[in-house]
Image (tube, rainbow, N blue to C red; front, side, top):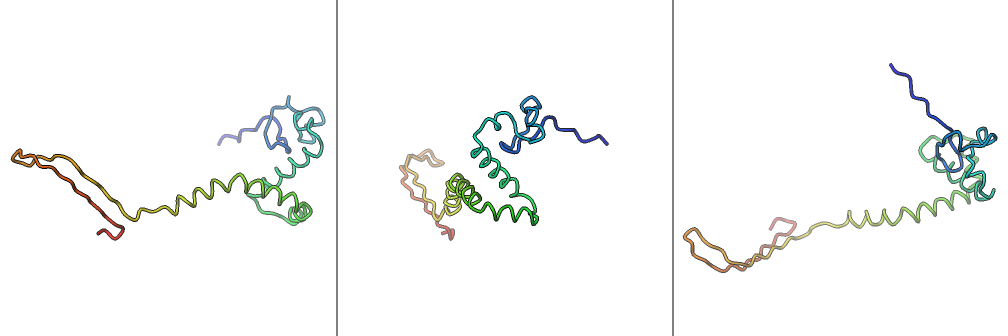
Amino acid sequence: MMAKKKQHGHFCRVCGERKANEKFSGKGHAAHICKNCAALPLAERNALETVGKIERMAGRYLNESDVKWLRKRLNDVQQAAREVHHLKIQRYERGQIRKGLTVRSLEFFLRGEVWDEYGDESFVHVRIFADRDGV
């Protein structure tokens, strides 16, 4: 068996990306904050970090400390939920509309000249209609 490949660089907990070592300052390695995120204003950096942590919590089991942390930041959670809802609701509603679309009837019109097996030409004007019941 081959050993698991080690990932290079560090994970920035603010932007949520794995970046090369050069993208982190000396103190940034230990704090897991890249240079770009460290340059952001403190309030914006904290907000991004909170939203990122909430997004990472979505797919895993929450222990007691996670639940306490979420309760303290209930307003931040609500704001993040509103933002995600605003971005995703349009796609969701469009999908629901598509699911609601069903074919109830089908109608064909055939208009033109037709030749029979003897070579005689006749003009045809036909309407073919089928509903959901198969009639």
